[in-house]
Amino acid sequence: QVQLVESGGGVVQPGGSLRLSCAASGFIFRNYGMHWVRQAPGKGLEWVAFIAKDAYIKQHAGSVKGRFTSSRDNSKNTLYLQMNSLRIEDTAVYYCAKDLDATFDDWGQGTLVTVSS
Amino acid sequence: DIQMTQSPSTLSASVGDRVTFTCRASQSIGTWLAWYQQKPGKAPRLLIYKASTLKSGVPSRFSGSGSGTEFTLTISGLQPDDLATYYCQQYNNYLYTFGQGTKLEI
Image 1 (cartoon, rainbow over the protein chains, first blue to last red):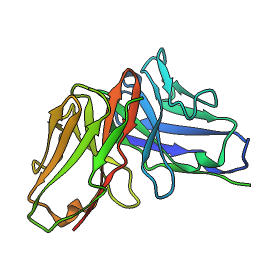
Image 2: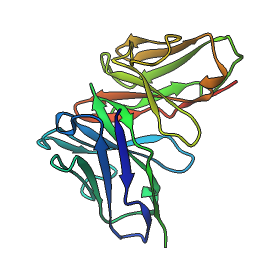
Image 3: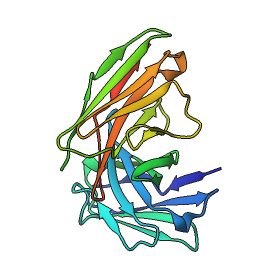
């Protein structure tokens, strides 16, 4: 069965950087686009980034464009999210999700990022 | 950017009821609409995609309909396990937006 396991979350000061990872198993990773979605504490869902199966297409939400970059290593079945210039409002649980017809088909358990001084 | 508006924000219902959630898009999105269920402390779960296609393994009491700007998710025969928040999500040109969610209270 599909498994997505996020890691790399933690506490970081405003202006700092963090790299999240998402280890995928149970499906042919290189055949699927992948997403990052976040959820601030007590709030709704916000899409963050999409990367196509071959990384040829990348798209990021306006709120993170220029600060966050998604990437992937198909040889390691791993998705990444490099987060720079972090802001307090980036505090959230970050989920990775497998794409299915422009939806979020399978989700990881999430990793918490806290931006605080 | 396309905005998604869900109504109501909270819905109270009883076991066995038929409940309907509504989602409106700020412009036409065809049938690029999905519905998710999120239980407290858990990751969301995809229920419906392309407006009306039930994801494999999702109970048949869930159904979706609509196109353009108006969409609905219906639960026929509410079960206690359906207590959750429900989100709609649209896709347009590699940009994705969620509605603010409807919390279902049983």
